[in-house]
Length: 300
Length: 303
Image 1 (cartoon, rainbow over the protein chains, first blue to last red):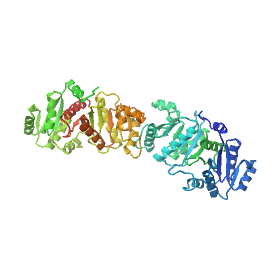
Image 2 (cartoon, rainbow over the protein chains, first blue to last red; image 1 turned 180 degrees about the vertical axis):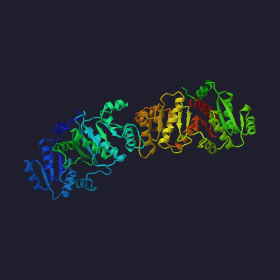
Image 3 (cartoon, helix red, strand yellow; image 1 turned 45 degrees about the vertical axis):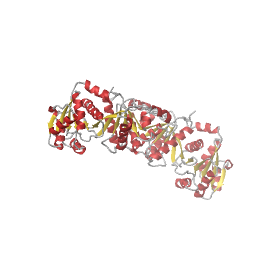
Image 4 (cartoon, chains in turn purple, brown; image 1 turned 90 degrees about the vertical axis):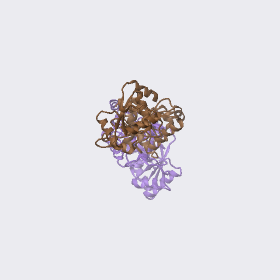
């Protein structure tokens, strides 16, 4: 059964072996509370890497029993990030989460060539899962946060991550729409050209387990009626599970619009490293953070 | 539907009209052989521009039944070419054909910006109809002769010309295969990336009256048996009518290889001009030259 609401992730995870979260520099209330929520829901185990005194103090302030966590002492944020990554590499955790440290430092620890979490040549990208109130299923979109202007190979990598995420959410053969200004092939518009190529590659089995169609306008991707009017016959139209954006601005504006104007819930993870990584920002709601932890656990 | 080059000739003959063909520098025995044969069979009216004495003596040597009224005396090649082109514009000839004149000089007249036969911005290309003993129908291929390394727009133009020719043969919704070494698009084969766009354009109705898929290799394009082996799902289904090649070397080698080793015959024509232009290479068989003339008659009709 495909997951169509983010809440359904909790039910699925409750019936599985608990995945082990490792949070880097988890000394702030946001991170500690979100991790505690995950543990209380019974969906994860959590290791918090950071200054133990600070972590215990935060727990006390929020009526959380520190003993629900495994706490690993680290004196500062950089040490904590490297330690968290090495715990993952030692097999002591299944996915990573960012605490109070800057995104730069967090990513640096992941990307470190010797001690990090990247396989050679892998593309690191960001996958967001949105639950729009006015759509009949979840929308899995990328890249809204990491790769500013993906080239063809990066787009292919992102497409594969979207497909992988969709499959792990129970969607057997995800339908992927490749966003361009229009469904017409416009040789001067790079998004349109590359969408044609990716779509053909999928048809030839170079991208597997999915139906990938593009170029498509945003309208026909999410609205069957628009597609019918335009005479487009793709199965993707009006029923897309995944959306590939040609540039970060497009994806970023889309997800922010979905949350602020449409009241959509969402969550996100970083894919491409050996394990999923949660990269929540302070602006995210508690709910988003918990969903992101759940999503990472689903993907781990 | 015309399925063989013999049927092409029969179709042209059955129309009962005589296509007027202006032959530039007709004093060439190969050319005269094919032209006189078509004229005797009644489907063309030759206009032989060139040296009357040479034309007569060549016909004598080759025992060709020349009608001297076909001859239009011209002092030199350049003049013959210019005059033949102007006859097309004046509606006095339907088809232009190259005789002994060098291809360079001949095309110069065709491509002349003020007086030539190519509309502004039109792409000039070459399409061949191949008849192969081991293929179940004619195969239209491009570009074997004019564009060395076609870009995206030229490939689209080539496709449209080949489709137009296939339609003239009565083939509905011709199946166009965009040929590469593999069916998988990839940066290693730049043409394959353009093919992905062209086939998507056809899917979106930007290229009409045909079915297009590519990249495909020759097997997937022309051999239904390979589809299953390779597990590729393509609307061409090993039943291609048209093959578009990524460059002139591949197209040229394809047809010449088939002529030489597989006993193929062909009819080819320059495309993009306001009237059909016949340019035959000396190495082509007398039969192929005759078929080129018949093809020009068919396409002049469908202009």
